[in-house]
Length: 396
Image (cartoon, rainbow, N blue to C red):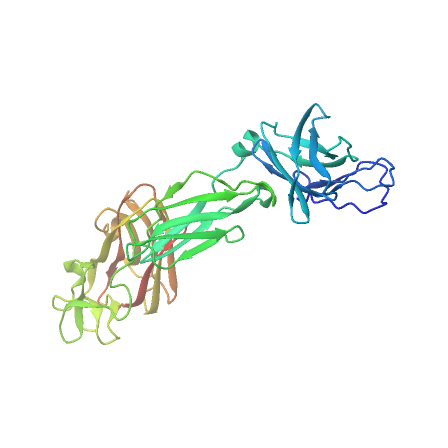
């Protein structure tokens, strides 16, 4: 909003013009000398709006002018302001308070020591107050995810017409230092690489009613604890074995392997021959597996997730009796194969049938422990499944 006015000598302006520069809060108004051939002595002035007030500053051409008089609200209100002389400049400045939240028109004239006055110069400003203040809100964080010390979160969009400048964010880094950053309006996605897990950030949004507004307005702080996505442990090649024989072994913590899966003389699930991979294998001299289970249990916050499992080699078939499955189940442990379709704690599963990346989506409604892993009943005819990696993804 620009309220600076310049008046040229001998310029004849016959009427008062109001130019609206935006639909709500930006406009300029110009002076009228009512047909006189002498220029107004108000060479320029600027009106800056505030909360139920304005600040008016300006210059007069003639050093003989001792004061200016400012009218508003159809000349029902007025104030007289002295002119100060600083070098070659003749300046005036004042604040007008207790104004209603609306557009106000101000008319200004200058007066010399003998009481002679110049023609009126006019300008306007839209003052803001409680209605505007009650309309602004802190931005909302719609998604956040913390992985190690990497925090990614997303703000909801907000209209620029609100006067938003950006958002101040204060957080604790992994060196226990308090860090303050300012996020500009057009940055919706924020990334912080050194966030300390377990801590809470706080943020507030800054607004300015218009470019010339006197006040920067801040919302109250909002506290936000980021969503923590658990990192699956020992979940990719090369898997770590807790104990091993010549080829086969048992997967190390946090994996739990039941006795049925240890069909290689007390070992099973870890395969050194195929690059320390996850592999539940039967046949080729090893016995069948009945309700073999390898799983780990983690604590999850309420959200929707995907379990992604990358299979690089398998010969499982939908025609097999029993079958092999990737299963997610509430609590500590997996159901038996024959109960998979009826067990109440099962959150999701998918049968293994080919080489691909399996994606099993599931929802946790309240903070709880959740187990995931492979469940299989497979014959001694020879079945295997090489699993390259397990990954947990936050969907929403």
